Image (cartoon, rainbow, N blue to C red; front, side, top):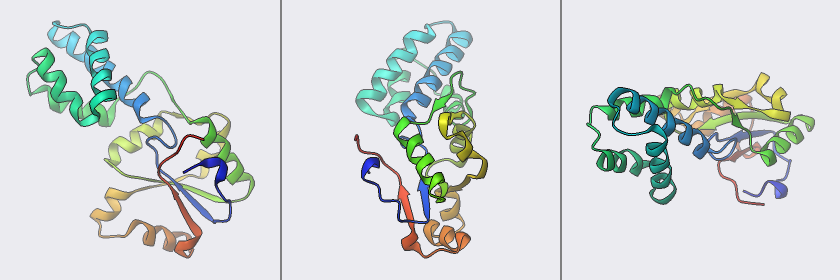
Length: 187
């Protein structure tokens, strides 16, 4: 979705977290470094920075799902570490804040100024997504976070709710007054 072409004629705007509010890649690269540090401390066989750089290259060329298997093969990592890796992705205490992408921050401010309602509707592990929210630096859009509601698609679907129907009912809105922003196109 091109943000500069976005019409502000809806009542509620639902934002995805990953690659909409912030760069998921930035989160994962920090997790990869933390895993490398953990592995270096535990096993002492590889430098954290070397492993993190390898994981970054795998992510950039083959995607997130390929990262652990490739790293496991490259460095001979015992499969018992996969649980540690997955827990770290969900619960990492990352060292750097996740910056709200500048065009999105500007849009959020325009929406607030236009008295529009804003919420997060996110897909994925609710524990992981909630953890990411803790590390967001909203920058100039900081006032948005005070009234922000967060909905987890996986949790709603698990409870047999259609996420949009559920949210429309919560906000007392017809579904055509809701706009989902779940991907961005470079402006």
